Length: 368
Image (cartoon, one colour):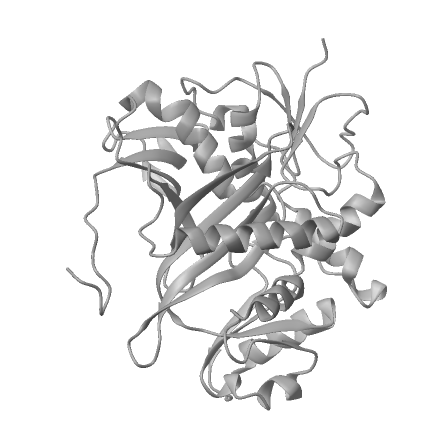
């Protein structure tokens, strides 16, 4: 029986961006080496979908000693690099429809299309939920002439993740690094997506995935981000994040799924959204900030919690977080399960953490 391949192609954004780049003579650049090694390490968390001795491919090499022994997770054989071809006819679990997955060009082009942030913006506009002033920008002059440029804003490349390929600012006066970063992204990608930068009070995600029997599984979670919106972790709770409109969000998810299917993409996907505070202090909902038409980390976090958490904490943990960063492996050993770390010292870079139960904090205007 052949071993399954798990493809951790977390560098897929580069392939997608190149497929849709307007100028093939100036293709989007490869990820910086430090980023490539970091995403390769995080790709090993996909072993949650594997069995003992499966093959797990990463873009850059990962020292096997970085993978911690975890009850409920298999040991896998790591392979890496562009020359590692996934053979046809074997089982494949992939992060994304992109090389080196043995998918058709049509399937990869569909994935590139629906992962373009302009696709998500068009759907948000169609559903009537786009942030006012959000638009596609083709030149620096076009950006400076918008109303959004007069306040806090973010310009994003069509493809990117985890806070990469974007520029944040406030007002039309740009310093040299901002101007240079905007111009470089614009030249590489041909266009940028402009959105107002709002005061977020809660980030969340929704994921949907086909189960192979004609039904769809789904889950909802809270996203942990820093003050600049960069991804830091995921919190999984039995009832989902503290939101007032879960049914509405599920409806948005179903609508997005239909549009993805029409565009030729039928695999797992995630939606990132957030609650934010308006200038008048009102709590507002942005249900469709981005579409991640791949196996989103929220889905991975749910799989890790389902497969690992009961072995360490039973079935009654009120909340479990998948977190990323740098932390001493000996700190709070009863509340943390190390997943990934330094190869030769007790430092973890990804771990599951049991959290205490949280009390609901009413938003402005809610009854106590």
